[in-house]
Image 1 (cartoon, one colour):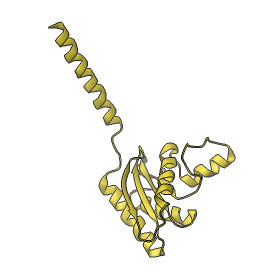
Image 2 (image 1 turned 135 degrees about the vertical axis):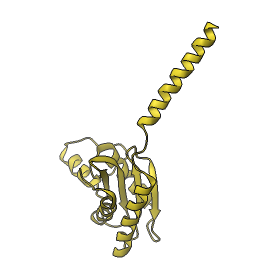
Image 3 (image 1 turned 30 degrees about the vertical axis):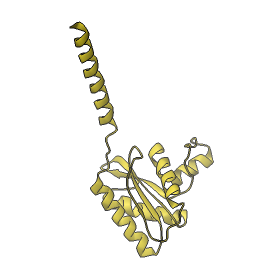
Image 4 (image 1 turned 120 degrees about the horizontal axis):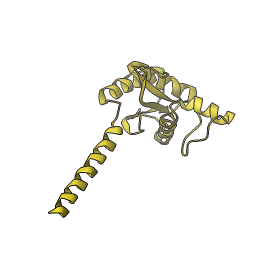
Length: 157
């Protein structure tokens, strides 16, 4: 009887611990927010005639939405992913991250890139994720990303 009670209590506490861990990793980016940011970014890129890949992630770097506009290069997903990684690891834009790495102010993120095109998304002062873009120049990628971030919040706190 005691063994069954111990087993039941252990199971309960393990379940409680795993539930707490899952709650901490809960996405702050909703599908609707990602869709709204994506729609704005895509419209901006298409208006400019830019064939890009756009990636929206939550704060834990989990992809929420991805669009590759016809004509975007094959490696654009890889670069967009690496920009999002940098943003979610540091909380700053990938362009600012590159400047800080070059200045020796911060260490490099393994697998990250040091050029513009990824920005954080802040809503009501809280970083809920990132939007990153690849396919044109780094400055143009960032313009598209900012258009998406500003559709639901801002790219800076």
